[in-house]
Length: 257
Ligand SMILES: O=C(O)CCC(=O)C(=O)O
Image (cartoon, rainbow, N blue to C red; front, top):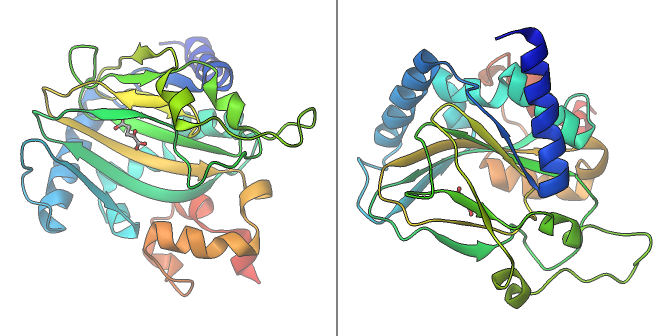
């Protein structure tokens, strides 16, 4: 594939995520990288006590222990993934707020319609994006991500509408949803507020997911506790334990003080 094609794929994923709330970057990982990531993923689930997976369950792992598995850590700093995140957030070095993996073991009912939020508050536009690096393909037959195009914008602060309230769960349920389907090794970029759901799952569904934030908006002192909670880590955490390729993304500047 030529450099021009790769650049076009990146700019397309950025503009799709901005317009629709979901953007796709196809075939980011090579077949070999997918195999390595799957092997590390399965090992992490056994090492960290999640077992081989019970039908009907979603098992998540998160925190810096995941970064000890190179096949998983690679999914957070892959240059093409970081390029798309940088473009969406307009942030030269995005802040990797949270690292996580999800495993759905079939048969699983999927996930109901919702938007990711702690409270029904409006937020600054494009201050966060979640990446989903899929290690198994998803399709309308099994585990597609369903989303309501453009719904993320209803949750953004607006100068024209200072008293804006975010939509209710009833409105989210009533949205019009379209499927996102990808092959293993491809990435979905999701603006957390976009309304989304997951189709019923009939095949193993594994992915590695990062939450990236715009430093200029999210790294205010009062949010550090939340970030530390997300990471299950400590302010004193030893940065040298974080792989060198992750460190620039991981380190919040205010901790330099
Ligand atoms: O598994 C997915 O694709 C999305 C899960 C989900 O809805 C969420 O984490 O908010």
